[in-house]
Amino acid sequence: MNDTYLQASQKLIAAINKLDEAFKAASTLDAKDKIYSAMEVIQDELNALIAAGLKDNAAQYEAQTQIFKDSKAELEKLKNQIDTLISFIKIASEVISTLSSVIALIP
Image (cartoon, rainbow, N blue to C red; front, top):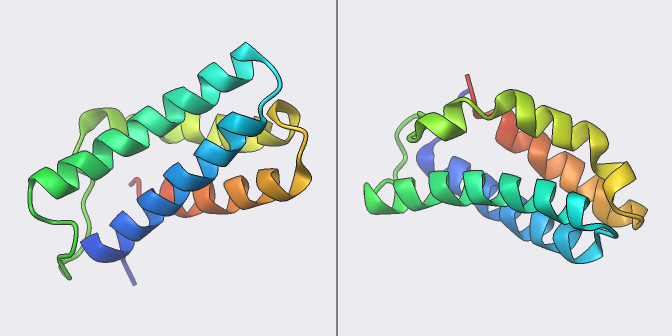
């Protein structure tokens, strides 16, 4: 079953919140930059959903921004590196889980 816009927006919000926690826990500026870049891409996608009036729609989700569509590889890379970027294991595992759900939204 594919996600609806409502489900996708909930996943995007969850990922932004977890990435914010990861950003705060990151130990280097490079790590913070990588995490913040991912947050921006996901936030832009969420903003596009809101602007199009689709955030609460029950229709099947389709990615709205090209940068989000093109970000799958970078988000996968961040997901695989997150445990080395932050030292708090609990936050790292939560970020990995939320990023996995967002990556699954991208065709």
